[in-house]
Image 1 (cartoon, rainbow, N blue to C red):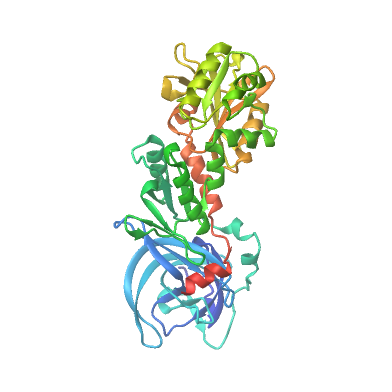
Image 2 (tube, rainbow, N blue to C red):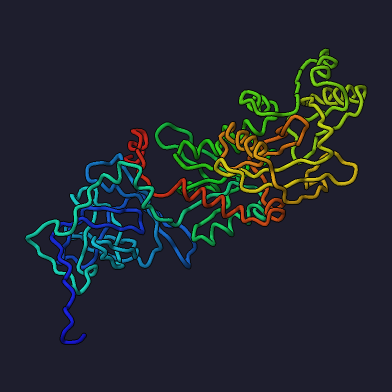
Length: 475
């Protein structure tokens, strides 16, 4: 520095200040500045580690406003150390240590190490010790609030979403197929973003069901709290799988697809009733339980050819094309003889063995592909030898796909459409659509789009805690 240069003004702090930790989603905190304390401390509860042993992370909750235990923010950060800390009353405690950015206002910030501990009984949610002070900081112990006042209003409005950072998340993928392409893509994409993604076999979950502290257990241990759950529930375990999802919902965990949406979309009869109730176009469909109604059932749909479809069918299995009325009667009699539930549906000839798969995330079609049947098969499913190619859909098809996904309240869905003479018709809404075919056809990273949505839904935001949850926490 030359003789003419003016040294920068020191940063002056009082013994109590308005500070922030933006990397944790905490834009404002009232902190005590104590040069007598060596380490800094941040109020935290429900502290738990996650991630790999090589790069562990810690997740914790904080009540940023003293006296407002109904408002909490969930934070996470990499663990840099775990050390013994002696508190002011002489108690020794093992604490996790994280590094984060300290914002003192007026454009001044620097990284500090801070320990995590429960300061619920303290007037300030943070203690700033001498290790967290830069050399150009002067503490004036007789003064308070020398930095600009910030206030707690941000935590009681939606503005917190605008300043909340992306943080490391702990995410569970409910799947029985760890080596499935879609499951592996979700794990890879999540870990690329710094999240911890754990595959949980749905069938190995079991539940403690009670009003105050519902839990999900797995392989003999209680599962930790997850920021989000991505359900990929197989058709063979739909009832049990949706019960597990429902348990996570009771815990307050964000579930990409709800248990109700999965159940309704998986039951083809229920699904068609939901779509009809929302006035979504679909092939004319009829259902009856009595064998005496076979002719009337066929008459409701129209003349042959007709589609006869098992209610539990997936990937084109259990779907039969009856080219004549007599063939339709034979198939219906055979299904009834097996005591199988089925429906009869109009065959859209002009579709010519092609359908459109629209991939919907958060109310938007993010990719679409045309599937064409292989050989003489009328079914275009890729699992049955069909081929796929990217396709540009019409505004009408886009609107119908979005409306169909919203009818079930699904955050992610594969909506299958037929192009008919009187507009797009929805064949099916899939709550666990595969990623492989449509990612390859569209050349889009749909797993990334999915995580964009999950991250947006679970960004740090004040959570209002119910009386039941508060009581369970205190137990």
